[in-house]
Every structure is written in structure tokens, then in C-alpha cells.
Image 1 (tube, rainbow, N blue to C red):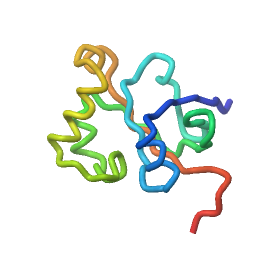
Image 2: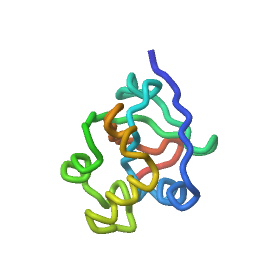
Image 3: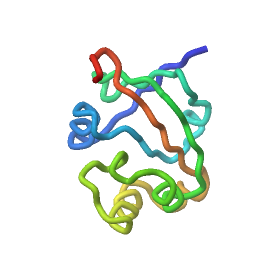
Image 4: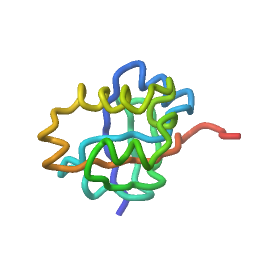
Length: 114
């Protein structure tokens, strides 16, 4: 069964998604996101539909940044340390430790892609 997830992004990240530069969304793996899988849909900020291509589970943000291309997560290409700090500004450490982290690879829907 395909599920639909509504995720909210800050405006600057929403623009990166719309432009097609941001292809991976990284979140603390809250229980309501745990079951997300390939083929599910995401609607960003109630306006941008996408399809989940792959979901990977990690223990920490540090791990994600080692394994995944940083420029697909943060297209403005911060350094490793800056990217890590960004996550830690968004999420308290205890959440990362308690829930782990997921990297959601997605593609935009409803647009012709080259």
C-alpha cells in the first residue's frame, strides 16, 4: 500500500527541491516515518509532490554525511562540519540518538524531467 507523507521544509530548502538540486531529504527517523519505503509519495509544504525512490536508515547524521552526497542534501554545498552543524541546529542530539536518522531519496512528480 502506497502511503502519502506530508513533510515541511524551510523556504530555502523548498526552493532547492523545486529546482531539482536537492534530491535527498534527511530527517530524524520518527516513528511516523519509520515505515516509509520506495513508491510512497511525499508532499512538501502541501505543494510539491514527489515519489520516494529509496530510504536508508542510519544511526547518526555524521554517518549519513559520510555515505550520501552532501550536495544532494544541501545543494549550497557546505563543508562536512557545517552540514553536520546544520543538522544539530535543527534536531537536538537526544532525538538523533533515540530514533536514528533516515535519508530519503526522491524524485519530483508532475514535471517533465530530462
